[in-house]
Amino acid sequence: MTEVASAVAAELSDAQILARFQGATRIPPGSATVGFRMLAVRRADMTVEIGFDAAAEKFANPMGQIQGGYLCAMLDEAMSVAVGVASNMTCVAPTVEMKTSFLRPAMPGPLRAVGRVVKYGRTIAFTEGEIFDAEGRLLAKASGTAIPTPFANFRKG
Image (cartoon, rainbow, N blue to C red; front, side, top):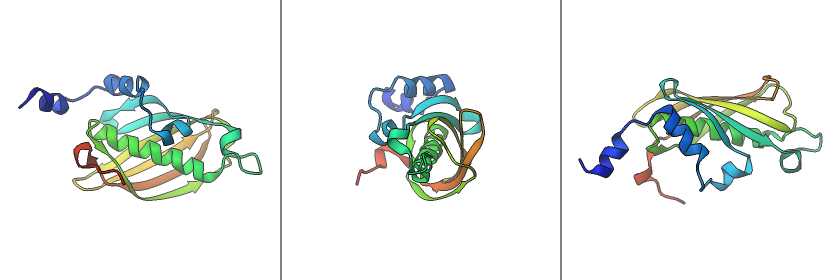
């Protein structure tokens, strides 16, 4: 096995994965738009916690609440990142389908999402996500499916 291949095969610790996210200099535009901040990684549980900045000037609807589509984007991000973490950071996770239930209005301010992989199969991953306000109230829940795709096989567009 080459040195590069063995480095890819080496299992990353939660702290190493967290440090990669927190030290990233190339942040995808969609992640930057929603104010993505990785808060915690638990590979054993296939779970991540992510902070988001739900700024009123970017995401509020006419009622002053965060528009649901942005909450969906945040939940999708959390669930997809959980698949990446579950893969030991070897895969991206394009979403195949997603269902979201909105439980209460989200107001502008910091939000926290939990994304988890319920089942990681050979060709599909089943995911769940929840998003909470600063007081810890559950705002929305989602479930989804994604296709774990090795970075080497992923094609843009």
